[in-house]
Image (cartoon, rainbow, N blue to C red; front, side, top):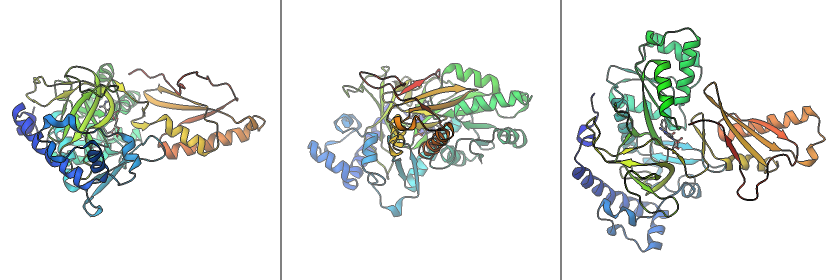
Length: 432
Ligand code: DLL
């Protein structure tokens, strides 16, 4: 299968090391000179940009966490003036404020390059139609794969998510070759095709690029069976770029990281020590190829492991395992990130009690979310009608903050479980 950028994807480890070193030195200068947050951090540590001479010095650098983005909301960590920013995306923050990411034209090119590598690794070619069913908007999924498809020279089909019958119709009528969406939506489309009595073999689609949420190899097999395609994993996060930070090749044996742009490390989330290849820990990225948001040692909270063993596909870039979970409490519901603290924030802003429980399930392969919240004692005497109206009001407030529908159930005061230690806020019945 073709390789989009063999000079990088198949480069020697020595070459990659030299390239990463050169890029790290530049990015550290950019961060220090243009982002007051980093200047202050370096100064407090007594660290100077000149102390960083190669990628081997990376462990001298401070970590960055999601709350640093929130504390500098919205544009405080940007290293470029507004006039150089050509795009903004955002994802869920831990409370009411989103995590905001800015891109220069070069950053968009870097990101599109990563996404193009991913599509090419999934067998995508110039004469393919790439059916993009990730959401378009502030979420990076839709536009990420879209620009990747164009960069590859293929035809991007910006369907966006939802309206499953129309998705199927377009797959039939346009003869899309590759479909991109979340794995749970791929399952749903596959089942809809089956329920509509359509033989998946009658569709031209031959591969899918699925990510934005955890999924298992069993689910991969099921999607491959339902849609009669080969299913490829793709990973990314808004803070670093979006989809295409890493991607599956035909060996489906770990995702190749675009390590000329995003330098990965695995750390022990408690001691913050760097762990050797093969050991599971928290994934950390340094954006050595980006201008507007040069994040240093960004803690993704995703738990996974790295390997630098050469892959049978010929690529030499480091591979990451499928993320196994998170070192924080973030949930991914239908591909959208949700923090329990966001739910709490909404409830408190509506003067509700902070006694709540989130129940996540998967029905017909689609994630569902229910928020049980205890009534205030004075609500207990309200009529059923007014309680239903309150539930609807909370549902709509949650929808507008989380971008995900959550069913709300008001519970009698004192009925939700109490804990003597950490409150248990989430019951996740899904099997990953
Ligand atoms: O989900 C970017 C993306 C879009 C990736 C489309 C792949 C395809 P965020 O909304 O910022 O960005 O969410 C990032 O989603 O830290 C992981 O926890 C999770 N995630 C993303 N891809 C995968 C994957 C996009 N392939 C967060 N497997 C990340 C498991 C994934 N988890």
